[in-house]
Picture 1 (cartoon, protein in one colour):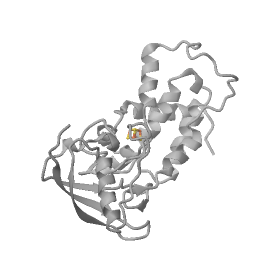
Picture 2: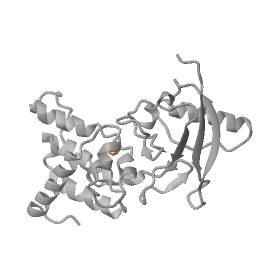
Picture 3: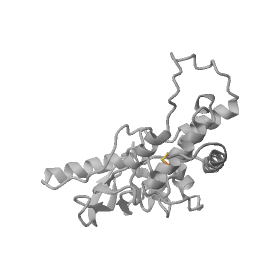
Picture 4: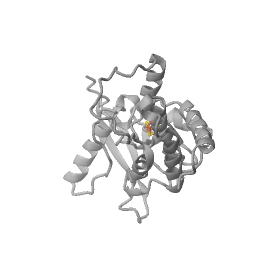
Length: 255
Ligand code: SF4
């Protein structure tokens, strides 16, 4: 436990609603280095509320880096400057006394701001609804090890399945592309036997929905991989592109 507090200046994006203009508002905080970034915002909100001021709207749920809810851009990095962690896992000891920290929402055409740091990321859910599932009736649940899968393939599928759907890859991309997210969701099913029946329909429906929802094309800058809190590899994008090409050659066009 470190008792010395950090004195910080926060420049936080405040925007009352989707159709209002937003701007950065400055706040001074004194916070324990052991606090998480979200706990620091909780403390600031308690103080604002005690003065009858509007608290800062931000999202969080599990606060364990699992749910993908807590994405905020901190000093220009989705989820903050420390690689491979979500905003809720970022601790204030990663900042220095006297620092100024810029805090803003994920910015992408497909993610409209709802209020302050909260954006509407339901476009990712609509991509999943378009094909990110297995719909064959498999009967009762089989034993987990009933279908032999080579260890390296199972590991690749599990790596892709660690995507928490936070959307940081979209916010990091200069084209606001969702290709890392979509390719992770496609890959984890495409690598497993259960995903084969719908493999080529799935890649077409999900890519089509991604394009319809206003996400941009892959910018090939690798910014998505660099900012992803779960270390999802861009090799998944290559797999998705290969599957998409094969789908175009061997299946009927998706309506
Ligand atoms: S690929 Fe990474 S950055 Fe993109 S949604 Fe999944 S976990 Fe978040």
